[in-house]
Image (cartoon, rainbow, N blue to C red):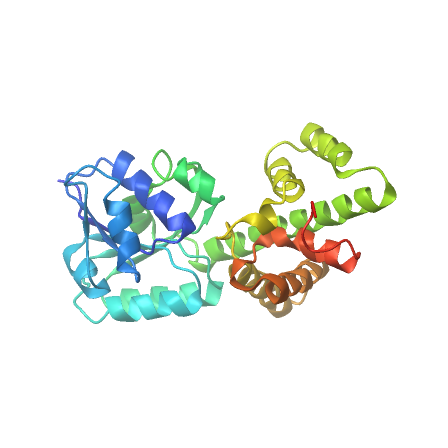
Length: 307
């Protein structure tokens, strides 16, 4: 008999991951869903056939009924609060699969608390944008005791993701170190594209000509972000794809990790400075791709293009 699963957290990434577990996870029991804003959980549940999901009204209720609990929330404070609520009940024998992007130290501390309570802990941060989460094309990075990781694997490659990076029997923090360092590549990629597009515009080359080069040489994420920039998607959308606060959280974790390791990440410092401008100018609507707007703003082109 398949284990009873619960899913906690329905942000941009969580919704897609949850959807794929329901549709491809070969469950024989309804997936238990909890979100702090219950309407979001109810709305998602209504997109599935009857009997595929059930919405829980509390973390404690969801955890009490589940064998494996997936969590995916926005930041370190949120996951600590979530786990504190989860651990108020009896969790012996349960498996927590934690997919949030948090500081490696936070993940290690969570693992200690959860295992001391008699449960198992697997770190499972993921790489990919919300569209990749929807399509089940994420890359799952797993760490923890091999026996525990094996319980999470059936819901990773082929369900939520297209590939796994397996750090079984390595420290929990390894998965989060890779995730944090990997996310700096995204910040630096957007910074490079932003500076390039602004120079192309101001020098007379033109952003469309530069975009042709990007499409030809760097298909994939570079082209996708270049499209978001020149189309104005970075400032037009009401809800960010990768919120500025989350991007700054990741940058801060990376800079802290670098400092504690005795090195630095100068390009991330520059990117974070531009993210600070995005927050100042766009507030909660700010998106990581808004780095382009911040570079434009510095160059006196205006934050928003096409105006």
